[in-house]
Length: 393
Ligand SMILES: *Cc1c(COP(=O)(O)O)cnc(C)c1O
Image 1 (cartoon, rainbow, N blue to C red):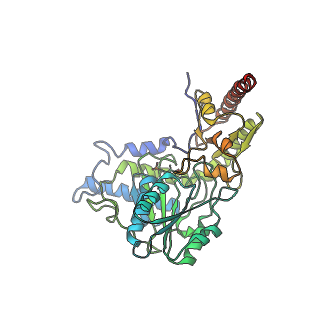
Image 2: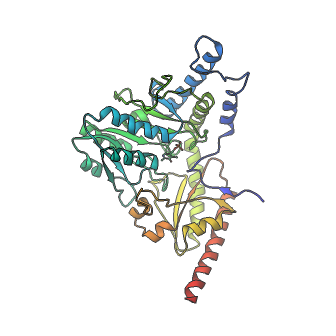
Image 3: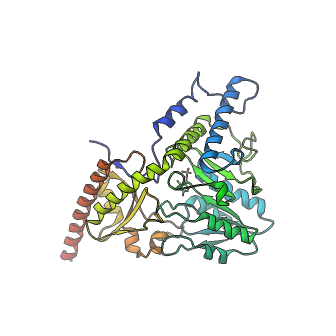
C-alpha cells in the first residue's frame, strides 16, 4: 500500500534533498565534524566557518544582520528566549505583556508562566478576518507594557498579519518591544526583519524544508534590544545561548533558508493554483465552508469546515489516503475550539469540524486529485451514517 498524500506541511516539512546533502557533510570523519568553539586547530576552524556561513545565509534570507542571529533548537526555544529573556531584562520598567489568543502555544504558555510569577498579560481577540487589529493593540498598551508578542502567519488558518503596523504602534508607545513569531511565515510570504521594525523574531528550520531541531531568535542590534540569557555554560551566541552549536543543524537551516528565499515566490504561485483546485474539488461536495480567504491567507494553507461531520471522524476516515491536521486544535489554554475560526464567524460545531490542508514544495496535481476523491468519499459516507442515526432516533 502506498503512503497517504502528505498535506500537513504546516506542522513540518520534509528536508529538501539539497539541504540533506550539505548537512551530511558536517557529520563524520572527513567532514566538518569539529566543535565550532574549538580554538587552535583546523577542525574547529572549519566548523566555525560553516556556522558563520550559515548565519550569513539565514540573515540574508530574512533581512537581518548576521550578528542579529542567535541559534536555538527551534522556534519554541526562540519564543521562550524572547519572552523570558526580555521580561527578565525589562521587569524593572513594568510587568505587562500584550499578546493574542490566537498565538502558538510556544508563546501562550510562557505568557501563562509569567502570569503565575505575577505578570499581567492582555490577550487580544482577532477580528472577523482572523487578524489582530493594530488599533486594538494600541488600546491595550499601558505605561507598564514592556513586551508585545504577535505572530506573522497563523499556523491554523494561514492568515498573515501586518507586523510593520504593530511595530509602528509599539514605536509610538516608546517602551514596548515587539516580538514576532515568524515560524510559519518564512518561505510563504515576504519577510524582512530589518524593514519590519520588529525587535525580536523567532524562526524555525523545519517549517521551511530544513531539519527539525534548528531555529533562531533574531535580536535587533539597530534597535538596541537587550535580553537576558536563560541558559548558562560555554557562553556561545554572545552568552545568550550556551551549548555546543550543532553544525549540521545550522548548516541545514542556512541552506534551507537560502533556497526558500530564492524560490518562495514561484513556489507560492504554483501552490496557489493547486490550493484553489483543492478548494473547488472540496466545495463541489456541498456543505463545505472556507475559513479565511485571499489576500489574507498564504498560498500553502486551506482551512475548511465541513457541515454534518465531526472533524475527528473525518480525519480518521481519510487517514489511509491523506495526512492532514485538525484545523481547530484548541488554540487557547481555555480548551475552547479555535478562537480564529470562532472569530471568522464559525460556531463551536463548525469550528470543531474543520481540517487544515497544508501544501508544500513537493505536492503534485495528482496528490490534489487523490485528496479530493478521498475526502469526497469519506464525507459522503459519514454524512450517510449521521443521516441514518438521525432517522433511527
Ligand atoms: C511550528 C511552530 C512553532 C514551533 O516551532 P519549533 O521549531 O517546532 O519549536 C512556533 N510557532 C509557530 C507559529 C509554529 O508554526
